[in-house]
Length: 278
Image (cartoon, rainbow, N blue to C red; front, side, top):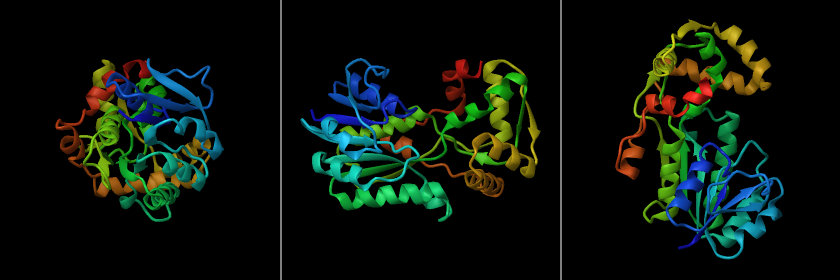
C-alpha cells in the first residue's frame, strides 16, 4: 500500500481521515506544527511542517508518499506547496467548498478556486471534495443553547449541513480507491432544514427546551462583526443565509453514490457532539 500524507490531521475532518486510514491498514503520516504535542490516532506518524513554509513539507513527502489529503486553512496560497506535493505524490484529494454556487467575489471562493486551479495544473490525479457548510458550525450556538434561546438571523434559511465524518469517509474513498480521478464531489447532508428547525432539533436531542428568536440582520451584522472580526465574511454569510430563505441550500446524492449508504442526519451529529453543547 502507498503511504498517505494527511495535511490538516488535527482538523474536524482530517482527524477522521487519519483515523480511518490507520484503521484500514494504510501507512499514514500527518503534517503538524508540533509533533511532540500533536494528538493523533494510533499508528499515524507525525511530521513537522507548515503550509506557510512550503519547504518544511519535504521530509513528510519523501520516502514513498503516493497520496495526499490537503486541507488548507485560511492562509495565503503558496503555489510552492502544490508543486512539492506534485513532485512526490500521484494523487491529491483537496477539501474545497461548493465554489460553483457562491458569488465570484466571495473571499472563500477566490481562495478555493485558486488552490483548485493550481492542483489541476500540477500533474497528479486529483479529486475535489466540495463540502457544503459543516454541521460543526452549529457549535457557534452552544452558549445560546445552554441558555435556552438561540438568537440568530434568518430563521427560515434552509440548510443542508453535513456531518464531518461523512466528508472524511468520502475523502478516504477517493484516497484509497480508483475511479475518483477528476471528480468534483459536492457533499451535503441528507435534507434541508431551517435554522429554526435546527435549533429545535438540538434542544430535542439534548433533552432541553430551546426557543428560536429572530435576530434582525442589522443587529446580527454588528454582533457577528464584533465577534468574528471580519466584516466582509459576515456580509457574505448574511447574503448566503438570506438567499437560503428563498432557495434552500441544495441537497446532493454524493454520499450515497460514493459510499453506498445515506449520509448521517443532523440528529446523529447532535448526539455525536452532545458534550460540546453541554
